[in-house]
Picture 1: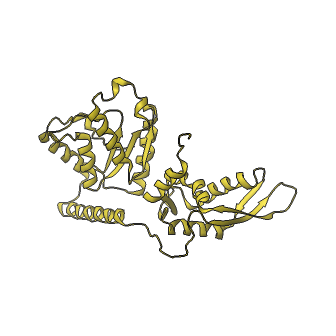
Picture 2 (picture 1 turned 90 degrees about the vertical axis):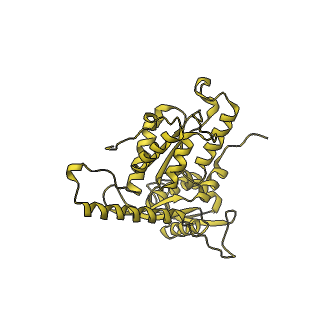
Picture 3 (picture 1 turned 30 degrees about the vertical axis):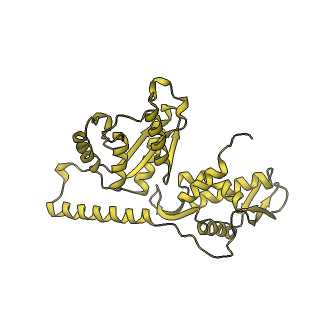
Length: 300
């Protein structure tokens, strides 16, 4: 992917002096990729692992952090896990910290990681382009480099300000909540021998969010979300239908409502073809609600 990796395994931290050197390496990076397996790792005098310190430092300087967390530590072979109970508890707390407030990818087999990392890194580079590197022979004047560095600092500040911005959640007293019902309507062609007819069906807002929320982890376009919702609704209303559409204005209302509830956010960004499009993503509150609706609970 034309990237220059600075693998932390090449700079194993054995003391605080070594960690200061690692911090300088992180300072020169544009993205931080964290892969958590079954071990907490070597720790400093304070009991905190150097991996966790690296993660905390990367966050503190505003780097984009891409987290990849093993889905089930209990399934990892014993030889690759911590035997010390304190280390296991610290690893559990570290996993929880990484998963809260950010999108992470879960993995179970190391063979999954190349695809997961490359896809996420490509998305990060597209959504949050960074400065990168240039050959010294192609570098400009000192004045130009100073300007570029100043712009980079301003860009990082703006990005941090944006990340701190809380998505709009309206406080109207009469706004419908997730348990209220909403009628979705549109047009359907049940077979090729008849004309299109109107259809309508009642769903709760919870149902609607349930159907589309997992797909929002991939930052889909506005049109893609509409198609995903149409497919999910069609399976419930007209599973044998030939052609099925949701009224565009109804879909716009769904978009506005979910944003008003603080579950999703949208923004215009450049597409891979160079154009501009509206993309959806989950807010932290939306991601928590998705897990609440989607997780499989133990049988009573």
